[in-house]
Image (cartoon, rainbow, N blue to C red; front, side):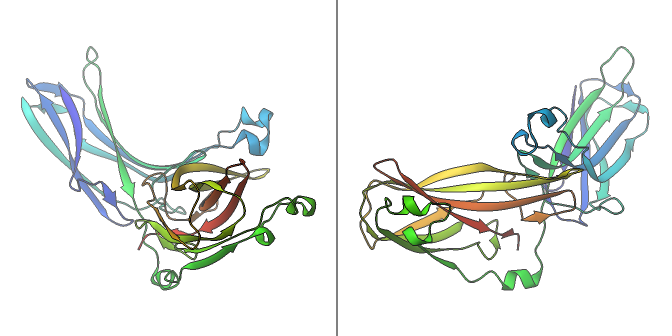
Length: 300
């Protein structure tokens, strides 16, 4: 015997206010009695504090209470009998938040997780194990029109020894002469469904370059009683150049944002999810230059 959840949208993608429709599918070789089929649709934000942000002792008590965004308890079928074969039992609900809450985009992070889960339970007799099946909805948010109008301009940048931060004045004398420039999209705001694009050009460099990498970072903030815990973790790292680079050659930058591990930039009362890109240039002597670019992601 098998229990499954079938949604009318195969991609499982929904927006706030959408009507979610589907059916609970029961496949049984023979007719059977049951104590009812119930569907629970729940949206939650799971929050976890980082030990590096709050200390090792507090890490033992670092799980914050989950924030419930949405909750539906639906009776799909009352107690009765299901015939042999495959039968479908429809359900529907509207993707709306609870009072005083909001719908946020589905996101799987390290310290912040936003889930929308459908759980179906079929109660059976005392001698038979109850059947249970889960399926996740993928919720997306659309940006407002005025945000879309602000995001068309690429960000121009230049990197040189004088532009470096967090470097002591005494150490700057040891830094070789170099000059890099280029441009990036998504810094003023960009579509999370479209890749981060740009170019990097090496104008001059006294030391041979070993590798150039692009690192995507999520910055997750959790609010708790004593303040705010902020933690940055890597999502992905791609190499855009290997070996020494010819001067004045434009190196293309192209990075796709992985779904579920990225989302629209989100700022809520209990948490924040933001994103950054690190441009990492590694020299043959193993010295490294890192330039950080905060980026804003939306969904148009």
